[in-house]
Image (cartoon, rainbow, N blue to C red):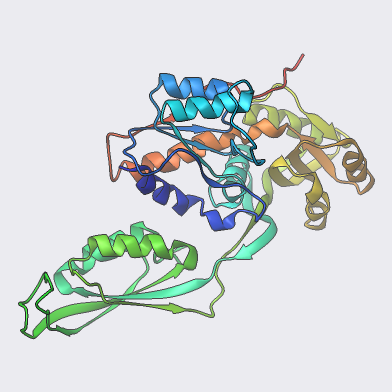
Length: 369
């Protein structure tokens, strides 16, 4: 598979349009127009990560934190950033970043944190948008309808609420006359052809339309595929940053802290609040989330788990009666397993010779004593 094909699959999980406007997501170093055999998933792209990628002969790195976030005025190998970029280019390693879009995406960072903590009935902490819905109608020869339908379902068409593989079809007659320049699957140039066809309809989010159209065209036997796309007034699913949900049972804040340490594999954390008080409703936001304190409080969270809390916002949390657990920024490492699991499932259906590695290099700058 090429890098472009792999990223097209990955973006079904983490579409770029979900990212905040200020974010730097997508291709960062190298090219996606090449064959890829080895992929590595990482939280950060530091020099030790690149050295690991070189050792494992990695072609493509998918990272959460962008390697290039602030504009560069030069690529100087005498600087840490310059050495990283030089090594990536020298060893033909492509870097693709999925940052706030992976935070927001279903199955991304915050869902992985919620799953690790055992939260149920989760929803976004703060809604950032709604996905528009479209109806896609395609006309397919009767004996190819099932293969086209399956390809489009696999690409993301036909999900309504808790139901998947949703479509509607009706039989009909397709009529066409190939011209002299055509290379028809059915019929002959200059002769009218009448074919038993199915009209197949799907509902899908607009964000998945390009992937679904590509899958449709690849599975469809016709040289020119007849299809219609309609924008709908129906509201699509909302998406947003962070999550809020429920623990299975109440526990003290102290016990919750121990649960966080065990679940997220961290040696220590910081906490705001009385350790003996009970908690059950939990808000989470991986990375730096102190500016969402009031959103967590407004939605009724007993405790808010997020990283990089600074002094004055911590005082504000205490003043408004919101308990806070700060496990650090690095707990976003849960994204590595989540992305690998997704890619293994999706890519192995297409290409069984791909290797997806989780980076083992340590990018946590803090030591705990």
